[in-house]
Length: 380
Ligand SMILES: CC(C)(COP(=O)(O)OP(=O)(O)OC[C@H]1O[C@@H](n2cnc3c(N)ncnc32)[C@H](O)[C@@H]1OP(=O)(O)O)[C@@H](O)C(=O)NCCC(=O)NCCS
Image (cartoon, rainbow, N blue to C red; front, top):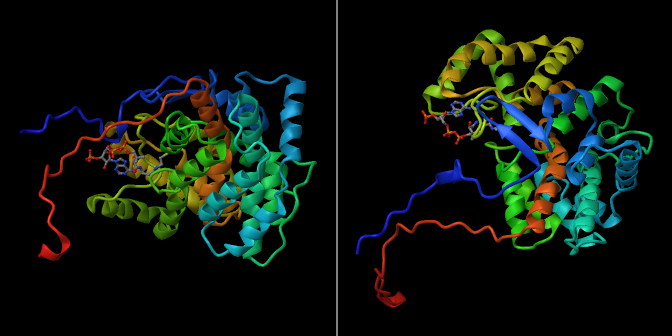
């Protein structure tokens, strides 16, 4: 009997699995809204603390609401000693693997661990958001033989990340840069890691399990790993005049240029512009203009013809250069993406819990049918 052929949507491309009020993306014109607000307004006028509130509560906070979420973040930054011990045990692992394990351990110890109510999930989302920078920076310091730096209650979220990483108070400008970076990474529809988190929530598993799933998925170079790969590419290229032959060589060998292309955006990723100018300004300030020059040359000259195919620069393209110029080691680039994305993963899980259906697609079987079982001793 001939197998019935189904219509297959490989990679679930173009498939709407549910509705959302988290974010709106128009990939044809490069538009992104969080809860109805344009990313350009949010990136330029808002703070990450406001975004946490906006995403988790659905509206912009007034002053006292903002103070409340800010206080909850400040109170939650410390890590339980058990988690610090685990970080020490696995200090030589990649920071994304450590982050995955660390969040899992935090889940085992969380007072709301198995409570999936709206209030508890929100509380856990705020706690994980607050704890993740502490986790990443504590691990980084431990692996370098340094003591973790305790969070500073005077500093905001972005400031604390830089303070706990470097052990000294960051400059206002760098704190703002980090803040913008967290804002533009906070939520992005049904991307692979958010979808993974949603799949976990759809089984009525807990938020920490969903976030652990999100972290595992984000790790891949086709998703969160691109910023690290872009900076490695810029270092390999070395000088702007080498960019063209380097990129051509990659493409002719069937490889992709990291930081370009997107499943949804067929125009410029609206988040990229907020990092482009900042990357240029920072590279001038640090006296290392070559990194921005290499990237700008790639974008404006080498990759320009690919715009006809809908391949434009994405959010990761300039991000790596900013982290690098701030002195952040390249294996922390993906964890930074994860730090920004926790509110988005939390919100998507909240949406899933609120109107749940098990996410369980089908795959069409194309293997052999009804084979005769041959006993082990009789097999060739
Ligand atoms: C993000 C990404 C996985 C989206 O992939 P997708 O929606 O599945 O797109 P496709 O794989 O169908 O690509 C369509 C075409 O564009 C090409 N293309 C896509 N991204 C490309 C890139 N970065 N460099 C060169 N060519 C690229 C593909 O090779 C394919 O060409 P073909 O039609 O001749 O085979 C892909 O663009 C990519 O790998 N980009 C680099 C990694 C990256 O920057 N990720 C961060 C995303 S925010």
